[in-house]
Amino acid sequence: MSTNDNEAPATWLSQDAYDRLKAELDEHIANRPVIAAEINARREEGDLRENGGYHAAREEQGKAEGRILYLKELLRTAKVGEAPTADAVSPGMVVTIYFDDDADDTETFLLGSREIASTTDLTVYSPESALGKAILGGKAGQTCTYTAPSGADIKVTVVKFEPFSG
Image 1 (tube, helix red, strand yellow):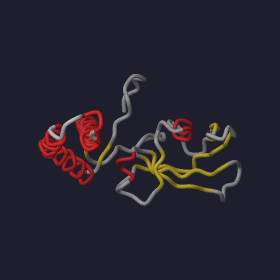
Image 2: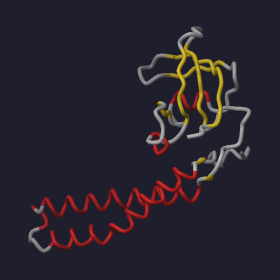
Image 3: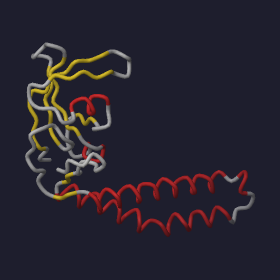
Image 4: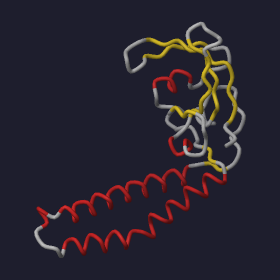
């Protein structure tokens, strides 16, 4: 991992996850002509101001193009394989914490992106979430506090962390 603050931490994907996302990208790209044909067919129906089918097709096209851009960037920047072991909490780790000072009130979750969420039964928290930001870079035994959306300050202690293996 780079120590450069301007560089985002690497997103690690298993080969299986990478292949699944690549297949989704290929499917979206292959579907472009179908969406374009739908837009053209709806355009020929007449007045575009009152043509719900046309507007729905354009909205579908916008969503598909946004997903294509997101997947292209994710796959371009992702690292495939096993995430290196780290000495601090980082994205792609399975983290166990406990709340306040109650070592029995633990939660184990994956610190990662929503794309990974479909590959696991673990709860996934984004590194950009309040909890994610608080524990990022933390070490086992370290206690940190974050502000919940409700405004309450919540204290958590990192118990352990390990790379997500899928």
